Image (cartoon, rainbow, N blue to C red; front, top):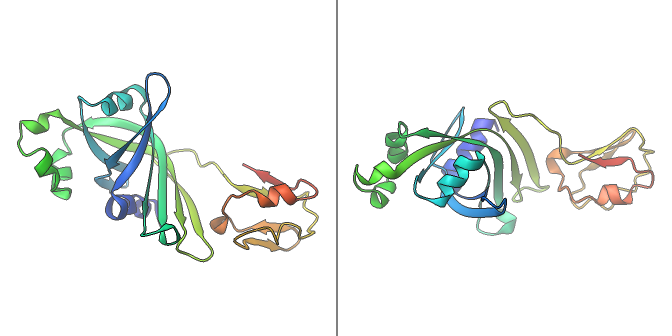
Length: 205
């Protein structure tokens, strides 16, 4: 899947996401916000200027969000995004209301919509995690020029190919060649391989 596919999945398949911001005391605050549109430039949502949520966005210009689709844990696909956010005003309001007509019931008149403004998540990183696949499937993505940082567990050249880590991997995603190799797209990031390696050849990034 492409970055655009992941962002579209958030809007079209998940839609209502849990967003975390930070208040004036640097304490986390969560709220449920609908992601209303996505394109190659990021994710878009709206809020009212009178809300505390609006002020937290203006103060910090950063958020993290998560959402999932699935009836239960083992049929669940989850996507998380963290990144920079900016206010872009009301120009996109007609498009967001067209794509999300239920908003007409909440803000039915032009006058009532004067309180609204649109925000864009324009730069960030994300993670896709699909428990419905066997083995599990995960992927990372970036957009808007964000730095691509490797994360997870990796095997260094100190590996002696003893195979100790294979049995403790819950997803069987370690292959033994000249050294052990972790299939990142199936890794749970549980840390068993790092804990059991007798020579400390597994590192967390």
